[in-house]
Image 1 (tube, rainbow, N blue to C red):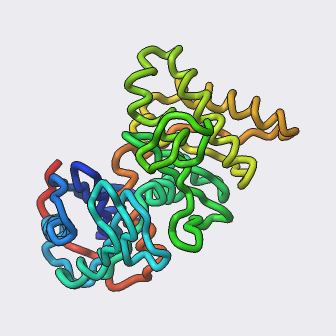
Image 2: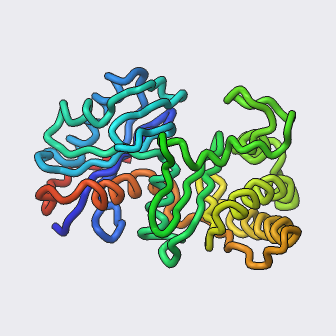
Length: 291
């Protein structure tokens, strides 16, 4: 078998994992419910890795999490939905398995997957907004993910788009998360016309990103990517209007993500492969897969 790696995407309700090859193809996959607590999560991840690759020695594992990750990609600084706080997740996995492990924010992982294998392959400067229950974000500049000084960069969902507006779970008010998240889609986007409401807020938030970073491309991911052009096109139109007000007439493309729900573990695996180095990864064993 050609060179391949294991990616894991830890979500609030399920952990998905897969063996990913150098072309981004998923060779096997498995998942299980997300347990509570760092020890139980580490045990569940280790079990999934062993299920996918019983001969695990030397395997490279990338793990995506919905939270802040240290700049050395070893520690989950904070992930509220997983009840992880300063959790040395890479160490916990490596203590259970003979693997090399890297941890990455889930939106960054999704953007890396799209950059390597999907909608952002042709650009070096891109942003990604993942719209699910909440809003996540990732930033790519000169072909590199922007993580910031403390691993907190890219939190697009917590940019304030309406000062003093709706209260947000982060403690602030008026965050983009409260106007264009999955919950907003569920309550406001009942028809294609209603996507204009979500596009208004996404366009505004993305105009701030564009003024700061000037990306070539913006990728819409998460559950919202299934809306396709019904959301991407009005979002781009709103973005173009706002940038034109500042004298900017080159508008980034706004496109749906291509890799769907696998993007998190695909990107985690690929990022680990690109940044940890190679440790005898040829021919890892593929175990029984379960969806």
